Image 1 (spheres, rainbow, N blue to C red):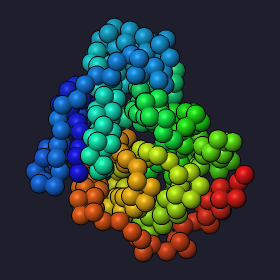
Image 2 (cartoon, one colour):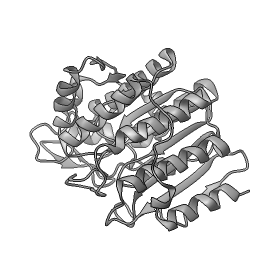
Image 3 (cartoon, rainbow, N blue to C red):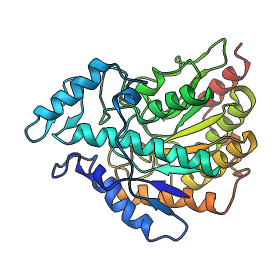
Image 4 (spheres, helix red, strand yellow):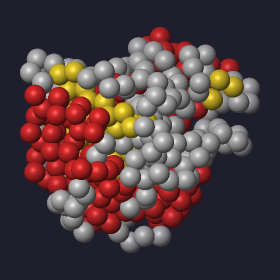
Length: 334
């Protein structure tokens, strides 16, 4: 599997005690570099203003540029709970560029790729950064794909937290399906937040009790989601918001799910993308235990490198009843 990252991504918040640290790309990249099955691309580019503007208004882009330039040491972006410094604007642009480059590889090689980036993006709303996120990496990639190919893009979000920023982009060729702890931060993505448009885009939120879910239940849930996506959504590109803060031991999230779930999910996503014959891209979101992030990515790479896919063997009965009912309702929605 090809992994795209950039050494410059470590500049954001260097020297801070923030959990969204440079180690999330630097230590993980160093560990991945030692594995023969991973082709590591360690240079990307900064997305330009026109690309950022696929999601974010110019006024917000200018605000981020201005506040980062004026930052002395570490401070907070005025729009929300995002720590920044003088280098954050450049790094956030490069995170978007890295995700775009990873998608280009996935599309050109007809093989999954992974964007190992920071800061994460799924909390960033069009005019508001929040939750460690400055620009919405996956949202911009999805809008770029739509603008350049006309493809319907499905964003599948496995992060512990709900991607409120990504949800705000649903429609105009973008669908969003998310499992997440609820009512944990940011408080959105509850059971009543579901929709289907006349043109086929869907919003499916699968709120999980913050006390956790079994590994089998988590895998079986996503197996059912993938079957729904194949039957009812049929996207022409798939982007996974790959947050690993759902893994047991994460200091910010933790749904009690074992690391091995990442490999099982990769098998599910590989089968889905293969059956639909569409590009598959993973983009790092959360995950603040370095070993959990590293091992989860290695699990994903091993599955894709082996060409594995197919049924996980997880029992549908392990999925909490409330989540089964949401998916059943989505199936019969007009």
